[in-house]
Structures are given as structure tokens and as C-alpha cells.
Image (cartoon, rainbow, N blue to C red; front, side, top):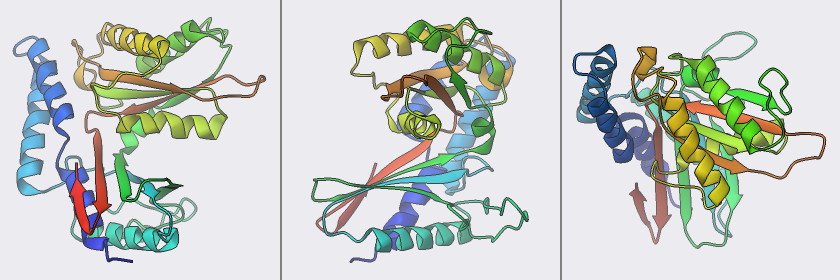
Length: 289
């Protein structure tokens, strides 16, 4: 197997230091919607300057470089164990180069190994597929926005949310209202309807790999995505909780089958630093988008 460690290090560097263009454009559009001289516009100006400087200096966009979450799509014959080892080596090297902050700590002792390699840290999802090339998706999920994620079990009598899409709407808006500015708005919501508690969280976070302009292929979910984005922004929470027009860039929803006894709705929150990149490796060449 080829040595892909340098390519994986570059994937981490780009993800940590170079905000995707669609996210940057969304920040600029949000700035134009806020009142001149307002706290909301000032916050967005600071964020955009930070984006520029981090790209220019190849330094992390945020001091919290988050949990590295990898999705690895590999063809037949590729050794998953070797891929995992090369990715772990790349994470350690990227940490040594300060593209990642040493974030991983032992939950029982609080000890930090200093290289972001711990028990189930980073997070890896290996999926074999029928394509003839390797694809690695990386997301850096910050702790602040992770803290304001929420999971609901419907029906929820407190919110008068039944087991239907109206119930989904009610709990998603409640999650945004409860988060306020603690999720470092403006952010992106990933929502999963159904599944069990664990798979629902996985599915909700997978939504963050979708481009901001992407709409669900399911017309009912696409309509709900649009409505929820409008209603979340109408709450007036605004950038960093200072009030304003833009609380979320968008809402991405998917669904899973479930047991009749369960109806979970999971809302994951991604901060304005929506750090995600994809590496493709085919015919000995790597490309990062």
C-alpha cells in the first residue's frame, strides 16, 4: 500500500486552516444582512478577518480544533487496518505541526497524550464501496457546538411535539432556542429523524458534509429544511448570540428506520467554523476539495 501519510497530513491542514468557500460566502452574506455598526456585524467582521489570517498563515481557524471525524470509503483489496494506522500517524504529525491542538484527554485520569491519539480518538468510520478509488472525508467538530447538540424522544409533552414532522419542527426550534449563542452562531444544524440513540447521532453529524446549497432529495424534508432555517433565523439570536438576522446558515435533515417503540430526533450543531474537506486518491494521485 502506498504511503498516504503526507496526503492525510495535508487533508488535516486544509481542513483546520482553510474554511470552505461556501461557508465563507455564507458568512459574507450574513454580514451584509446585519445593521451597520451592530454587535452582530462586528462579530462577523472579526470572524471573516480570522478566516483570512488563518488561511494566510496556515494556522487553525479556531483554537479548539475539535474532534477529527473521518469517513473512509475504500475499494476492495485496500487494507483498512493499514489505512487506520496511516491516518493515526497523520493526526500525530499534524498535531506536532500545530495544525491540530492536542485535544484528546483520558476521561478517567484527565491525562493528555499530546498527540491526539487516545481511546477511540480520532473517530473513524470505515465503509467499503464499489468504486475503484479511495475517498476520505474529514470533519473537525468543536467542543462548544458539540455541547449544545440535543436528542429528543417523541412524543414530547413539554413541547407538544408528536411523532410527525410538525413534532420534529418543534424540537429542532427548541434546540436552537436553548443553544442561544453558546454554539458560536451562525451555525449549521444537522438533524436525524429515527434510528436508535447512537445511529441517530451519527446520521445527524453526517449532514455536515453536505454543501450549504444542498437540499434533501425528499421533498417533504427539503421543505422542512427551508422552513426551519427561516424560523430559526427569525428567533433573532444572531451571530455569537448578540442578536441579529443570521442564527443558522441552514438545516440539513435525513431519516432512518426505527423501532415502533422509539421516535428519536437528534439535532447536532456545527459552529460557523464548519471545517470539512474531502480527499480522493486514485491512480496514484491525491486531490483535496
